[in-house]
Length: 368
Ligand SMILES: Nc1nc2c(ncn2[C@@H]2O[C@H](COP(=O)(O)OP(=O)(O)O)[C@@H](O)[C@H]2O)c(=O)[nH]1
Ligand SMILES: [Mg+2]
Image (cartoon, rainbow, N blue to C red):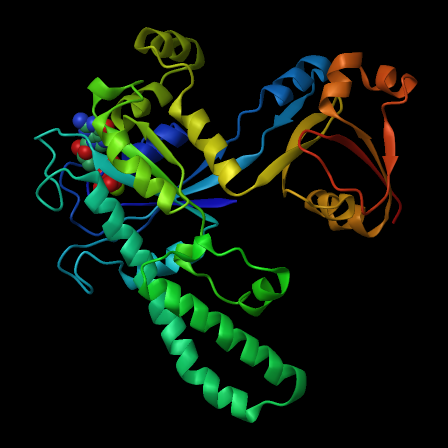
């Protein structure tokens, strides 16, 4: 699962990246220059249930679910499209599963703003429009070719091409009305028609307002009030935190971090909040495999069947799938051990079509 960070120069993308990864990538007050290589980091997804399972099994190894975070700069004012996305940036963004848009909401006069003043809503609208324009150009190019293709094709292929044309025409209509594609509820068949595309405005979007130190922990700020209607109208959840402070917190060790957070009156670090938000955004859930060797969380899309879940671990397990022995996390916690759950009849043997639930603990039985 890959998440890309976007935003205007100096809005705090790299600070957010550091806050979320605990990394030390360079932050700079004047970042108009092109940064050739993106910063890439891995963020573990915290889950108290996994911590509880580790207490129970005392495994040699613990593997958390992870989110891969990519910080690509590349919005270069005055180049290519003005304030726009460079082709390299678009190429990077096509590869991510979700986007985090960082908005400059801090006022520090030492850090110049790309547009001369701090206005988070203006910036949010600007970038949303960039995503929409990038998609519109893809749709237009494809529609130009489709008519000829439809003439050449016959039978089922022709019907499919016609379906694609009809869908893209609907997309075009929405995009020209500045409506992002993430708001379309598509059927499985429609999703199939556009499988080859990677529309940017279709990717789940999380807005992060990078606020002043003085706004830490506050929920009724002017920034939040200004951005909330926009976030809601674009189906994008909104978080507000101070990336600079969170970056410093993330770089502390575990013990110091707790003290620091409570001194600031922050209940949960933004890293934990953001990762959870990203997880929800993508509608993915974890299931666990447990044992003395390893307690591990695996990420699947909600609604995934047991055999497909097994494939996450190894294709052999999916191929030779016999049964999944499943104990729901709550049942395991309630009983205190796998065997106790079994004695109470709470360990279920499920077939390949069983839909895996959030927090299921699974032992796959297979033969190859
Ligand atoms: N005061 C303040 N400064 C920040 C904050 N976040 C980032 N900065 C500063 O803004 C500048 C640009 O940050 P950076 O993360 O490099 O921005 P990027 O160009 O979007 O990657 C740096 O000097 C940061 O120290 C913040 O929350 N508060
Ligand atoms: Mg940067």
